[in-house]
Image (cartoon, rainbow, N blue to C red; front, side, top):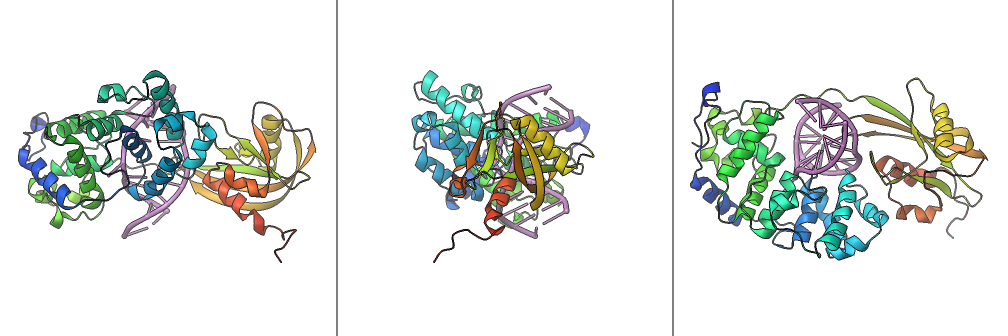
Length: 377
DNA sequence: AACACGGGGGC
DNA sequence: GCCCCAGTGTT
């Protein structure tokens, strides 16, 4: 047992006794069940950093192909620092949380310009860099630099909250702090990087959110939730409120050469820096047509006529549900001007632009809207 | 402490 | 449809 099994208020502040047998059992399992990933085995801080940023809130299976493409295009931090932001965002398209790509690019330039191309080795120094929080700093420091620092991510939270059968809701800062302390107390001095990865592998493959495979768990004998039969109840999470619905309208504007108008979204905020069909969110009670008139006048200073609806799509974001409708439009007056960067894109150029999923879906479907002017023979 | 920030995979 | 993912930054 790692800590007293009762979770009464009296025992809440009792520090767990680190049991060396725990890390030994975990590392043995790790050595005998190697999980293959493109970044596994590398000690290059650039590679570890890239993989860890991509893995933030993103599954291993999703990251693998992105990681390979990214490393092929930017083999070292100097190549990334020298690249235009648009290229970075294009490689990131579809991976989501685009602030990660912006911070990645910023950090690469910082490393090259201010740190002679070298990553700092300490978790504390790493955490000062953009896009690197406590988790990522500890992951890089332990894996690439063999520093004895603990990680705490979604996987580790699940494993540890089961290990001590934690009945409290985990989003509270006090509880999270308690889990960090527990993670640190369990961390062995030897092979901290492998140990951290072993803990995350365990959470990903054995100690899963639903129906954990406790029969094959290498640390089952240490697990209080297993002993109590409460593993499916841990960790305790706060229930989420229903998502609000957001309506948005997009304009399909074509010029004489049949190119369509794209705009670049503001660098910060939702889908920041990506390209998009011009348009925006509908205000309360506002019709889609009125929304297009308003937003295109505001963004680009142009007057349009809104014609027929060409496509509609739905997308669920973290905190709202988007209903996007796209309308064929006609340019009545003016030419795109103002703060918003815009471009007329020919069909064959569309793949070069970085678009969010909803816009990409609409643009990809365009070919079917009307017969091609030039059929293949 | 609460919220903004994407998209996909598994059931 | 719902959950949740190798989290971070802002307010």
